[in-house]
Image (tube, rainbow, N blue to C red):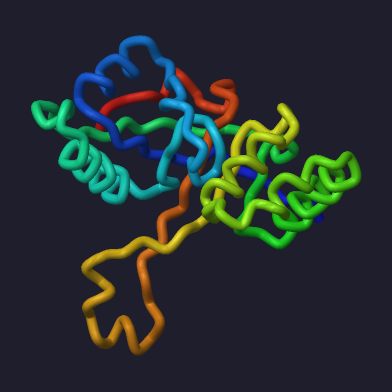
Amino acid sequence: MKEKVAPFYAYHGTTKTAGENICKTKTFKPGKLRDDHWLGQGSYFFREDYKQALLWAVNKIKKVPELNHETPCVVEAVINVNPRNFLNLDSRSGLERFKWYLEVLRANGMGIRIENSLEKSQAQIRCYLMSLLPKDVWVVQRTFPVQSKFDNIKEFSQMGLHLHGVQVCVRNPLAIQSNTISMV
């Protein structure tokens, strides 16, 4: 049985100025190119987690001095993507598909640069490999652990409950339903 992907809500943490521009133009522009984006280059969202996107925006504004005058906001969008254009790195079939991509890269001599790069971080290696994915991969999803106030709750720790953020990187804006973009 093949995986199915239903349309889902995704939340993009940003500044109010940027959020208003996104809602006005109905477009997301990928952030600055970096070699350590978690899932490669693209527009980033938290899947179905408004609060996580808002916290990300608040922290970003605190960390970047030129943004200190800005107000954090969250932009909501609906992601609607065909399963063949969706790489879900949280699923067995998604990891199998990514393994196959890596095998193709190795067969073509592309994986050698990474295997010999011990000084690279996990994020840099992941970003590099994501940049080599075929263009038909429009959306990549992966769940990552997030440090949070919940880490200090004894019972949560005893049960192994920790916050995770489901990150979604949209590599092709056609996956975003532009008529649903709004600030929340």
